[in-house]
Length: 290
Ligand code: PXG
Image 1 (cartoon, protein in one colour):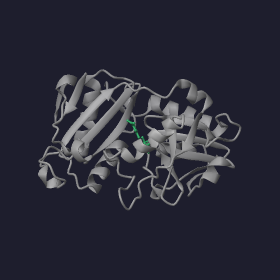
Image 2: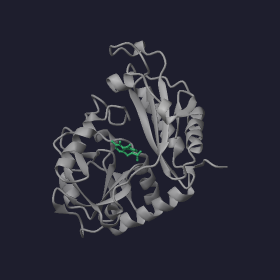
Image 3: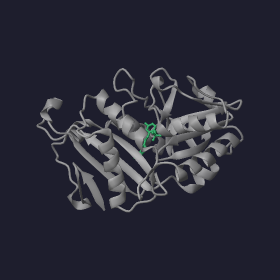
């Protein structure tokens, strides 16, 4: 395996980062998780745009242009001859002395891993999954805005641990006021009276790229889709529910906090969107092997 590290492709064993890197010491950095399907990087530009926005929000100057970042991703995928896989792009504040002050780190570290990805069991995509609300609330936007895809994932990891201890794969996270935000690595949608609803990002959710793709699919199919502040009651009484994310793709949810959602099977609108999403991933994206 070849890993992109600070401008070079190096063997996996040589792809190492200093223990003085502030990404490790303080979680000071940003990242993206992307996917390749059928030899194409899906939504590459959108991921790079979001990375640049995350970096801007934390005042991290990425020493590569948008085009250079996109080229580096494609080059890394190509070097590993991956057609269907997962890409992790990370930019940290870089190596510096101890202490929070980012001025200690003159040069950001950039690395890109292109690898395979393990999904949830296929059975869950067919039959739907169960989620539970967990005690850990999503970070408040006034503290660490969940729109920043930063290396500080402990908030979500705490929630994930609670989900696992509750015997399910994914956690529903509320904001400090008790409104629905998202899951630990996925956005959430419900269908009510044939209308697609998802929480606005200001409640405390990442502006997911899969979420945006689902909004586009809805438009294409003339299914009304809108952002709405949602409570757990709205979820419990929904006709359908599903999660979206680059890693999870689109996965139906059929049980929340022991309440059966809709018929207890993946809903018709969910299945239609999943089908169209699959088509798009197979045909769209930046070609790696031209
Ligand atoms: N919310 C959170 C908190 C996320 O981390 C999403 C929503 C979905 O966003 P996208 O843009 O992917 O539709 C995410 C994304 C991983 C991994 O390595 C995590 C994500 C994406 C890819 C890989 O666990 N989270």
